[in-house]
Every structure is written in C-alpha cells, then in structure tokens.
Length: 101
Image 1 (cartoon, rainbow, N blue to C red):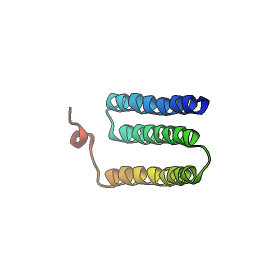
Image 2: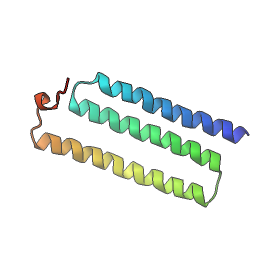
Image 3: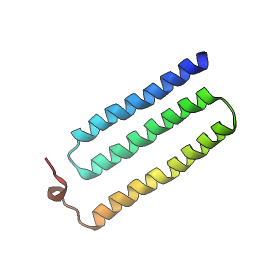
Image 4: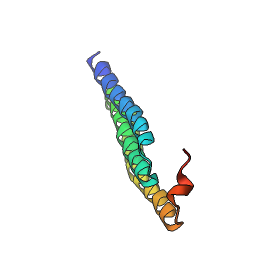
C-alpha cells in the first residue's frame, strides 16, 4: 500500500516535469536552447518514471531490467542530442530556416 502510494507520487512527479518541460520548449525561440531543454526534460522525467516503476515492482529480475534500461537511456540520450546539435551546427543551420512561427 505505502509502496504503491510512493511510486504513484514519483511517477506523477516525472510526468508533471515532462509536461511543464514541453511547455517550456515552446517558450524558447533558439533551436539549440530547445534541444537542450528537451534533453534535460526527457532524461529527468524518464528517470523519475523508471524509479517510480522500480519502487512499485520491488527487487526482482524485472527491476534489474528497469535499471539496465535506465542506464542505457542515460548513455544514449546525451549522445543522440549532441549528435543532432552538432549536425545542425556543422550544416550551418540558420535561425531563419528553423523558425516556423
């Protein structure tokens, strides 16, 4: 009972963080600021949800899989964000090309 309540609070906090982060993405006008905030929101929100699921499931083989998925995500998300930002920089992507407003 207590474990379910704690995990629900952690999962809800992660989802709220992602929701407010998505709203924050629209406030930035620069591509590089948007990609930075997206990477942060995605990482923290996903890890909070995974921790909530880990608390709810307890210690088992399933929780070991969740930890492996979270570690894989923590390794690949910054690398992919860096690759996208670097390719935009090297292709001389200007602000006028990115502006859809």
